[in-house]
Length: 102
Image 1 (cartoon, one colour):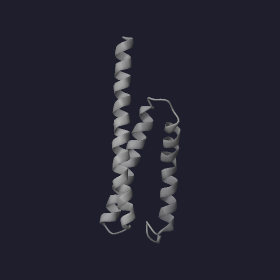
Image 2: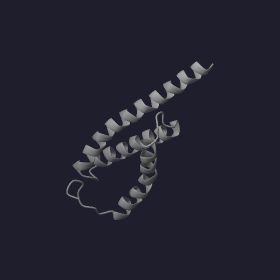
Image 3: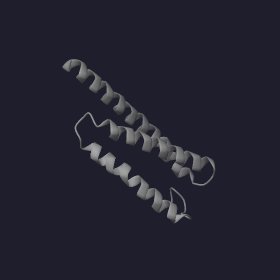
Image 4: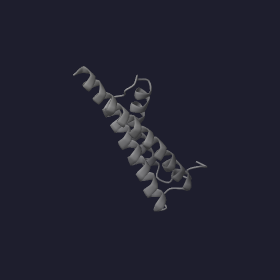
C-alpha cells in the first residue's frame, strides 16, 4: 500500500480484482499459445488494457487514487501498443495465409 496509497473502498478493490480475473486468464492462456494468437484474445486484451488505463488516469486526474496508479497507466500504454501490434500482425498473417491458399 506504500505505492498505491491507503484503501478506503475495499469493496471496489475486491470488485476490480474479480473483474480483472478473466483478463488475466486470457493473458496467461495467450502467453503459452503458439503465434498467431486468436483475434478474440488480442481484442479482449486491447479492450481490457485500454479500459484499465482510462479508469486509472481518470481516477488519478480526479484525485481519487494516488500517483502510483498514474505510473501503472503509463506502463499500460506500452502494453496497449504491444497488443495492438500483435493484433495487426495476426490480421496480416491471416490475410497472407488466405492469399497463399487461394
